[in-house]
Amino acid sequence: MIRFLILPFLFLFLTGCATTGSTETKIPAWITDPLKNTPEKLYGSGAGSSPDAAVVQALESITSQLYAAIKSSMNKNNHPIRLAGDETTRQEVLNFVKAYSKKFDFNTLHVEEAFHVDTEYIALISLDRKLLYTQQKMKLDTQISQIESTLSTVKTETSFEYFVQLYHAHKQHKSILAQMEILYAINNTFPPKRYQSFIDQIDRKYYALKQSLHIRLVGDANAIYFLTPIKNALNAEGMKVNNTQQKGDKVVTVLLSATSQHDEIQQYKTVKIRLDIDVKKSNKSLASATHTLHGKSSDSYQKARVQAVGHLKNKIDSIGIFNVLGF
Image (tube, helix red, strand yellow):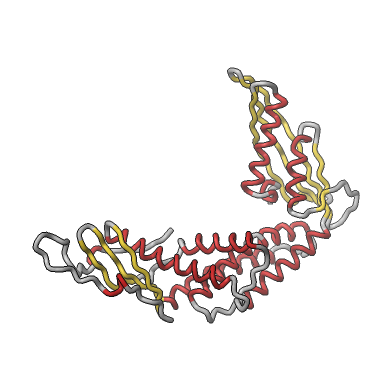
């Protein structure tokens, strides 16, 4: 959320409200000829029904300029930030750019001038590039440090636990790329090499380890309905799900067990299912989770159970398969 503090005295009323008999209003030059950004400052102007509304619009004009500049530079062959993937990937990065730009810390906001005529306020604001760059770079460095710290807590780099942490790190790549793009747009001396190397290193480890892991998926009689959505979700992540009898650090077993309660409320048959998930390697529990799933049908308990399976699918789509497994 955009954070700023605007006090009424910041607004210099260059003219009063237009009234009958008033002299002709002198329009500031920056309204008809917007100021261009400089190496020190980003400029934006906006109009609104109140001083705060005018500043909000001015802030949005700055973020819109950054977004347009980033979108344009991403398509250039000499762009220093490497974006692997198709147009969908680029759009996902741009979506992160838009989201992050709305969270800028605008402590450096300065109202350069303001103009008031009739019921409209118009503001010219500036942001200090250097301070904004420092703030955003600190946030990016903190994110990467947190990823590195989390990965360092896993003792074995060939284990399933390490893979799950790599998976979560891999999922943050687009947000990291978006922050890199923002930093480069603020200051084109931003050095992307270190951050690009970090992303590449995570990718190499992630894809290599994923190819070597095996998952056994087992469920009791009450849980068999839930095996398929979990298997499909793991397959969608490129995991090998089979009934291998291999043992070792790269083989894990996902155990599902379920209990259910049946009821009839008015004209509906309802089921409430407790699904317990335990992820094990040999006899060691790596993760566990419990999910309460619901379903109802006017026809049968069977159809109500199918709806409960849909409830699990929605959870997987919402929080991700590894969070569903308890990681």
